[in-house]
Image (cartoon, rainbow, N blue to C red; front, top):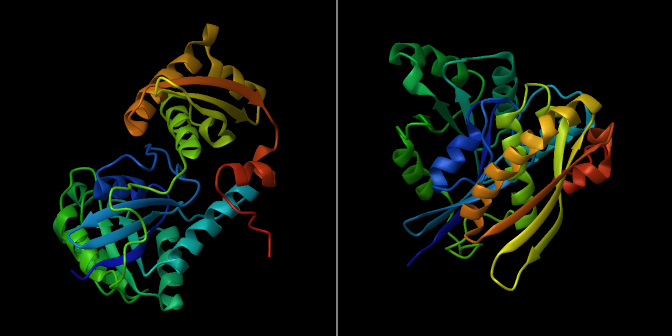
Length: 299
């Protein structure tokens, strides 16, 4: 039997639904999702087995105009993911349309000459006649070999996209065991799961000023795992919000994260969280490396 295997980079502006699309395609919650933009901070690999094909989906950070070193590292990770892939999917929020960020990303993809497809997402929220002018405008910016219209939330169009991706990856041996879902280390998966709950449960400004690092990940004799993680925040006020009155907020974040990790790791999880203030963590190379990013200024 001839097998196929290749990398597919999912790129786009913040909040286009890239993580939701990857999770829908793989059938597993591998990349964290929230209604807030810029949730994903580094490349996450999701493995889709479809027939005799192994499709290696790379969920990249949303591409935007960076300000901090963290932002620059995120954008660099996104473009590196696109450059390294066999095929790039430009995911566009059909409801938001052709924003300045989308126009710039499409233009750069077009200039790169890389093989790319266009995927319009959230099409369940837009009337069909409005999709044709958007598609036409995007086609003036890049030569898309294929165009798909999907809803990552409802699943509309997802099977057709998955079949097309399976046929599009090149012939070759599988690069990962066929029962793997991701290459994300458990320690990083634990940190990301906690960070997702910070996005879900705290105010607008807190998630962007926080990062999570797994300090300890210990397998126990009874089959469970003990995880200790530190949440770093850039301001004293953020620390107070995260901890909450008598520790209620951090307990809630830990409880929900523990539930998700128990499901993801398929074993009992004992999760312990600590919150520390660390001003300027988003400019520290060590903090960037801890969350899976490279220094964007390095040669």
